[in-house]
Image 1 (cartoon, rainbow, N blue to C red):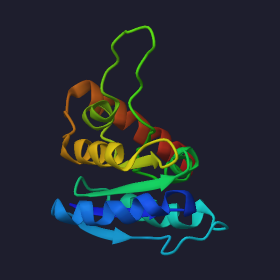
Image 2 (image 1 turned 60 degrees about the vertical axis):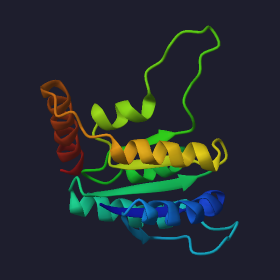
Image 3 (image 1 turned 180 degrees about the vertical axis):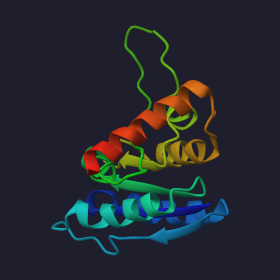
Image 4 (image 1 turned 90 degrees about the vertical axis):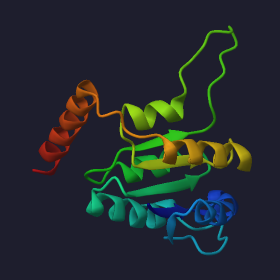
Length: 163
């Protein structure tokens, strides 16, 4: 699988640790920056480059992992592109009342066929990020009719917003 990576200064250190991790998993990695720590860089510049690639490919074999402080702004940028379904991960929610919640990463892939994972580098550890990335890459889209139907509706909304 080809994986595009992009980050601003807030996720730079974590991105640098994910590159060898992804290569060791056998993925092709394309780094869209940032290529050095610059506290004055602007995440839309790098994130748009990765999202543009995923959008143009529109293939299950092309995904991106983007990083920022919270991952929220990065996902907003990525989701401006057609064919992109970017999701944010800042760590699995653990409710204080003891109730069980579904595995967020699993659902983003199996139900939503997410193709960009946005990580909040200020919220998660390197190990949590690696665990999330591995699960996200290894979880297939279920292909269930209800999920396919919903993704088609999202695509229709994209078409309306472009015209």
